[in-house]
Length: 102
Image (cartoon, rainbow, N blue to C red; front, side, top):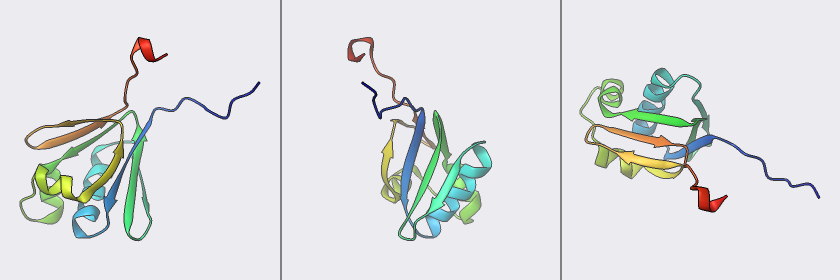
């Protein structure tokens, strides 16, 4: 019996479209080699293999004004993976399954 499921290490985020999302995309594509962005009009889909790093200082540079993690989290509408929130950085990594889940 064949299965349609396959293992993937891709993580993704959905950002509500707008000025801030465009700045986030520009920073992420510059700082995360292999990251991909797709504009769907009302939202932007960012994806990469295993990890995406969102540096607020880089987003601030792109916007030309201060930007912080709480504001970023408002624009982040959904994600797949494991999120790590720090003072000036948000990292989303591939979710790892435990041995008991296999």
